[in-house]
Length: 316
Ligand SMILES: C[S@@+](CC[C@H](N)C(=O)[O-])C[C@H]1O[C@@H](n2cnc3c(N)ncnc32)[C@H](O)[C@@H]1O
Image (tube, rainbow, N blue to C red; front, side, top):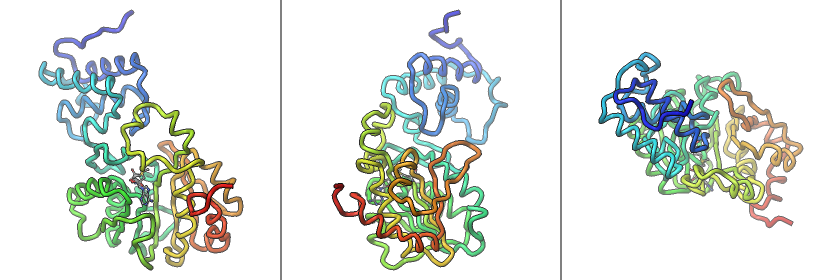
C-alpha cells in the first residue's frame, strides 16, 4: 500500500510521528546527530511542535493533535528534508546526560557517548569524592562540562574552546544550568591559556575527522562548524596535542578520556606504545579511550606526539 502524503486531519501523536518518519525514509535522510532512525528524528520534531516536555513519554502517543500544531510539525518535517539540518538545530534543543542544552549551528550537536561515562561518574576509573577539578577540552555547547559539574557537585570545571562563537553558546547553557560559579569558560588553543593548572579528570571530544572522510560526510554534517570536526589528514591533529600535553596537566592518579571516533585505528598506529583502554558503551558508540596519568608518563607520548603534523611538524 502507498504511504499517505498527508497526515489525518486530527492525527494522534503516534500517527503524526509515523507520518514524519515515512517522509524522512522516502527522502533518504541521514540520522546521526542524536538519533539514529527516522522515527526518533520525527518524534523530536513532533515533541517540539507540540511543546511537550522532555519528560513526556509514550503515554502521549494517543493524544489528538489540532490542525495548528500539525501545521507546525509539517513545516519542521519540510525543513528537515529540504535543508538537511539535523533536528536539534531546528528545535535548538538537545538532551545530553539527561540534561537539556541550547544548541545552534555555532556548536556541534551533542551526541558523545561520553555522556554515559559521566552519568556513571567515570566509575570505576576514579574515586568520585576526590574529584575537585575537571577540564573539558573543546567544550562546544558546554554539554560535557555542565554534565560533569552536575555529576561532581564539589568540583570546579574549566571548559575550553578555541571558538568564540562556541563559547557564547556554552555561556547560554552555563547560565541556564546556574553553574557560573563552578564552570569557567576559557578561550584557548588546547592547553595554551591554562598555565600550570592541573586536573583530576581531563575529558575531551575534540575534532577528529580525517580530511578525506570529511569530504564524504552526509549533508547534515555541513551545518556543523568545520572547526568542530576537521582534524587534519588523519584526524589526529587535536588528539596528538592532547596526548603531548595532558601529563603536565593531570594530578596524581588523574585520568584522561578522549573520543576519537573512527580515528581509533590511525591513533593506535601512531602511538603503538600507549596502552589505550578502549571503553564500551551500553547505548552504543565507541572510539573513546582512557589513559591514566601514570600510563601517559611511562609511554612518553610527548616524544611520539611531537612527530605528528598537528603538533608542529610537517608530515614527511
Ligand atoms: C567535536 S566538538 C565537541 C563539542 C562538545 N564537547 C561535544 O561533545 O558536543 C570539538 C570542539 O573543539 C573545539 N576546538 C577545535 N579546535 C580546538 C583547539 N585547538 N583548542 C580548543 N578547542 C578546539 C571546537 O570549536 C569544538 O567546539
